[in-house]
Image (tube, rainbow, N blue to C red; front, side, top):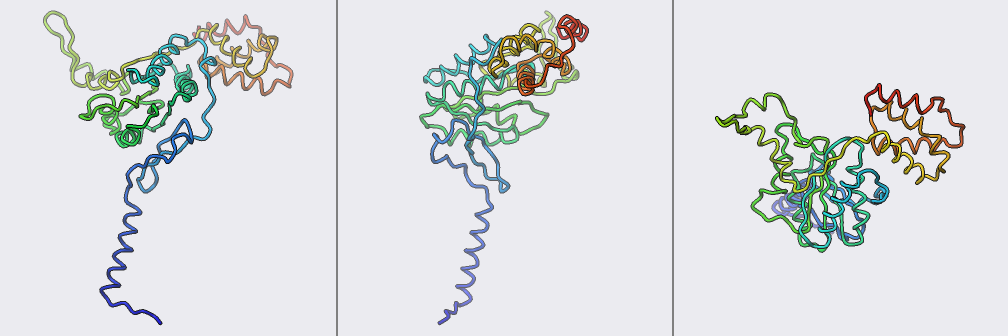
Length: 315
């Protein structure tokens, strides 16, 4: 027997259905993962409905601190700061700046692998999602694990909302910083914002010669100053580059004879890219090892290649 609802009951039912549809498309508060031990690295992602989620990174690129060469000073600073952090001692937010491909991101990844057994976890956040940093911090605050909020290749254009969100998280919000959260960011810019000649027009000079930066300049350096630890990276010299090439080729199973034979090609590879760095060295080693079954095609003598390097001003 069919039940006939009166008009009021039908109206209530349709209103409930409508409410369910509206709730489904409204942004939902960020939820903590059911098990933080599922992965050592997580990625914050925004869905099309505006809801943010923390997704586990199933396959984190393997990297050990011992794999990174010619950045011993930088490695010691980052490793020391990270160790202090996981041991519950005071530590600083870190800004890694400098030449491209010199190991900034790799160093953070290596620290993650080294200290993950002690409870270190990493959450990668894109620049476009930095406005949600307070929500991410609220989710992990009070957890026993230690969390690094990782922002790769960080830089801002004028007026981007993530700039002020990052400033508040680092230092400036009325809420106290969570003891189990640090921010590690990499950038090719020291001050994270574009700088123009016109910025200097507001700089004032006192009668005794003292220089007072204007408000525009002060604003542009205020974010980077909130990172307690600055670590700078520099392009490799030719000898440093060749040592890193040798290290990567050895790690890929190449013997010393092959490493010596590859030196001219390695220099040409760097010249073609206009850069000597750990990334370029790793890319060359992978290419050379991948075609190791074929006869070597390097026809240039190493003295000739060194001369080319001097002409290209890569020394």
